[in-house]
Image (cartoon, rainbow, N blue to C red; front, top):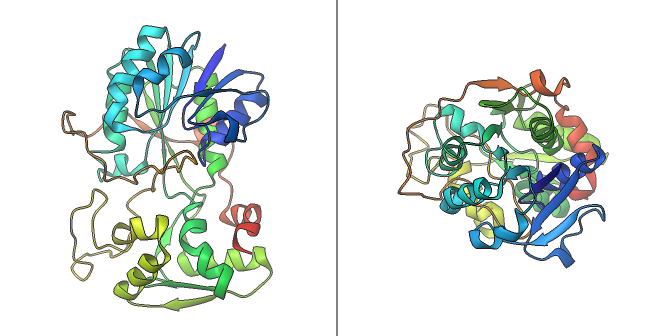
Length: 315
């Protein structure tokens, strides 16, 4: 059995590739530049880009199952090509924001394309990616040993990327998951202050938590650039998940986690939920949602484990 992994150089995709290889599966990995992908030698790295669906014709040959990185603008074309190539099962990297009803224009259209394809489908819906902390908090922790945020007592359940990948691998390889969505979250809620303490413990050094106003935090993120600047308004409550303006002072739960930002493929940066697909019905998904542990048989990894796994990212 051959499985095509799209987004193979992503935060989750790399672990999906490794998990499938460890299970003895024939893995084909889609990447824009196989020479720079840094994928395991046992993976067949092929050139392709989900924004150019025609690229996938050769990549899909002989493929039975597909791990689909979210690209809403071309999801229907990709699914049509997969069906034409004889793919029988697709596992979609989606978002907990779909379950919550926040996301109607980014991950939901990809789910809908899979559901309407005629293939066996499963959606994997992670909550907040723990890896976002590397992008958001990494620079100030590395340079100043400080985190600046307006809501130290805000609780969230950051999820280890390996738990997301484990769920995807399970759905790709095992039967009994068709027509389901699986929520993947951290095992217990932690305040942001507690999360900073976990990272500090992993480093063996103190990290200061500076409580600042939302406006001050946004200025820090904008100066930081990159992922932090691109997502500052949504993460701090100035816009909703889909980019619509919100007044943080009027929000009943300012800064509340609206779901994950998207997996970041090293080939390209995925929009965290502001993409549009104007031809797609945006009614909510009807897929029944289950906790991932019911499928994988393994509890979620604690945030402290994630912090130890990524301590070097904060040094």
